[in-house]
Image 1 (spheres, rainbow, N blue to C red):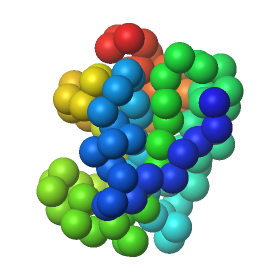
Image 2: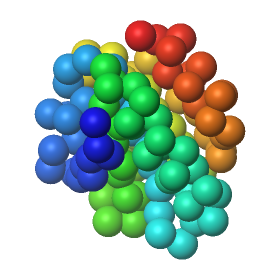
Image 3: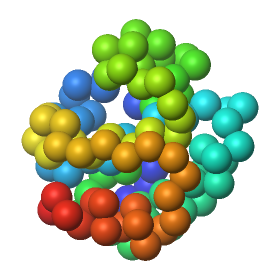
Image 4: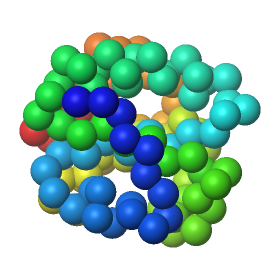
Length: 103
């Protein structure tokens, strides 16, 4: 499954069903750029979950509602409920384990 860009308008709908990982990021963020290819790989390997990206610069309303203060921040939703959060550029095995803990 390919990465999906989400925004203020569709955030709730995109995170409402199943297991959804939200990558809160910005273009100027070096660690965010390091995590991006890892999430791309995981989106291909883990077809049963949806991996999305929320650009915090362009979607400040949602970022504020979520209390995002550091990026990258990974948010894990299960059927619309936030179940876990990780901050920082994590290596692939750690991100995979983070997701699998809530499948």
